[in-house]
Length: 205
Image 1 (cartoon, rainbow, N blue to C red):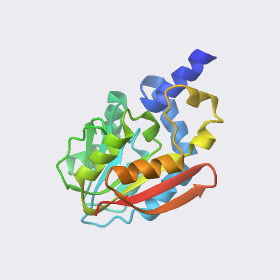
Image 2: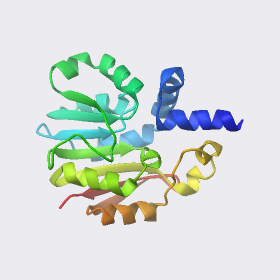
Image 3: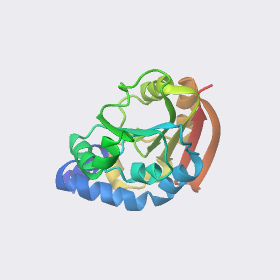
Image 4: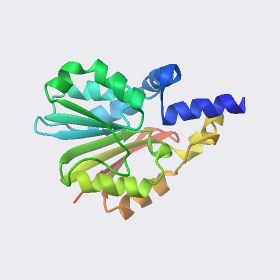
């Protein structure tokens, strides 16, 4: 059982192969309320450049493209997910509306102050250095740019056996503290599911 849980946890953090395809489909189903929160609060304009950190199979990116941003970037640590999302979006990539990159949030391959909106959904548990990741997000955000960080809370994740393996779990207070320490100003905190998940919205001043 332990090896099965470790495998599942690994697929959530770095999906690949058949297991990766299944895990990302499951995540798309489980994260609907989180995705809805991003769509309703990111306020995309036609001049916006947007970054998805940890796009998985690209489900949420495709939803946001319907809001017609200037361009949406996505980074992913999984070569398999990069390949799958690339094959699913050839037209958008060819037209320059989408650019997918194999990259780590701790070292973003983007220029300073080049992005208007950044979002990530349930990825911070798998970052090796959350503070560095937030600092990189601040670096690439334009002044006034926003960052939507959607998380499941530690108190809820602690109830799930799979999160014993490969997950760094955080309380809302810990997320707030690290956000501020990285130089981002918290604008508001959206409660998605009481005691379960939230979205921390911060801004680069």
